Length: 251
Image (cartoon, rainbow, N blue to C red; front, top):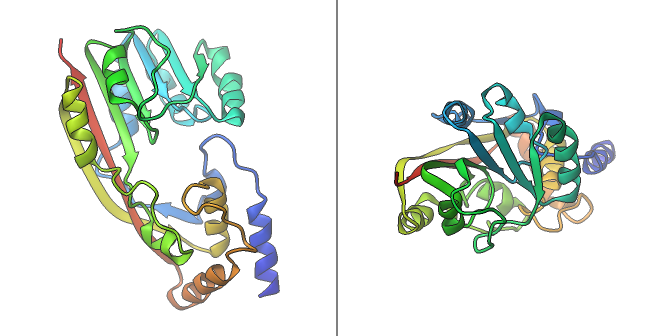
């Protein structure tokens, strides 16, 4: 067990930057949603002249759609290491990187009717501000992690979801009240699977709001419980939930 603990502690110190879980390739598997965010976003981009990508991370997802970019591409990011990474990766390609914190009620530093498309993948947003900065006929596309994501994993560590009401039922009325017509809304439930406990350690350090204050030392009994379960079941499977919404401003 001491060897395992040493390994978990090594995983705890592995660097994580941007929004890239490639380090866990083959060790963490997330079920496939019935939609493709990238395909839908790419289709919208091909019809646009301007786009805002909210909380782009290190630009990982946006860069995968590079061939579809319109003339004007603007991104926001607030986490300092990701701001630096986004600027390094995206500014040489002509992208404007705006360092700004965005929350449910925060204003956005853009003029009215600025963007054809606003993209949002797993980030908070102010519905009224999104509607304000879209041009007439503009489209907002957001994919969100459901508030009950991995609730059973959190329970192992004595944690509960911090935003359990982050659901389509919450956002759809807000979008409609802001003057946006919902043209597509889907949700999905599936599995989040880990092949080893070290992968969970890395994941929880990379996504610190899931189990606030997580550390190997503090949560060792829970990790040992997961290890025992892994040895019986050969994998560790938890609840995965996401949803996607596309809404359009009246022309």
